[in-house]
Image 1 (spheres, rainbow, N blue to C red):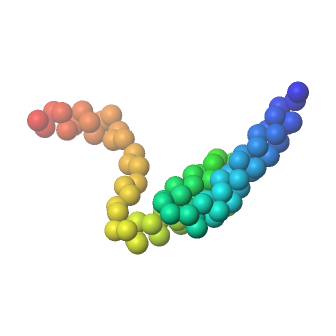
Image 2 (cartoon, one colour; image 1 turned 90 degrees about the horizontal axis):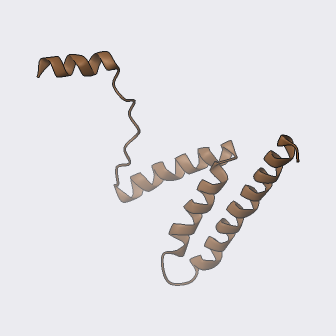
Length: 92
């Protein structure tokens, strides 16, 4: 099996799995419990592993979630450079 075929099969599998979770979230959404809240972002994050549009949509959903709930989701910070760490240690 060639590398191209494996990539295509992976993309198809991610597409099917992600959309299955999203459709399942809509079906479970009418039932009592937090099904939609859990399954929809899960399906979207599965799709975001292969598709840039899903990654952008997931980012927008996280921002809206933070605004609606008031939860602060910290952004990843870059680790300080080695020179800065040594300077901070020397100051101590």
